[in-house]
Length: 131
Image 1 (cartoon, rainbow, N blue to C red):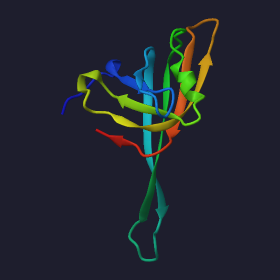
Image 2 (cartoon, one colour):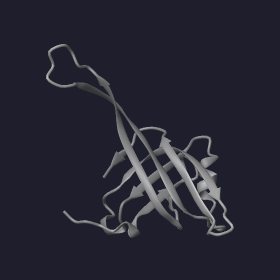
Image 3 (cartoon, rainbow, N blue to C red):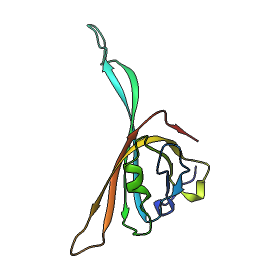
């Protein structure tokens, strides 16, 4: 099993639910959380707690630097039908990624003492998968 440095991560995002996804330059961080709902089903006499699982709650975050030539993140956040996302941990393992439709929220942070940055979060807008 290989290990990879995060510097070669990639994120592809469309501006609508039907548009082609394109690489988003200037991002420097993304995270993906695929927590699963669980319901406790413990009963008298059980040796430990027991659970049944429900649905995945796919969500995550994006961050990077603002690029005045690329507004696809903000266009996608305004999309009435969401976006398509493809998240790659490394361009050195291009066949391994997560993908799916999402709702996107974005923000800009401007500081007198720093670079203009963008950040956002996303939530699933349908079924997600992985390759």
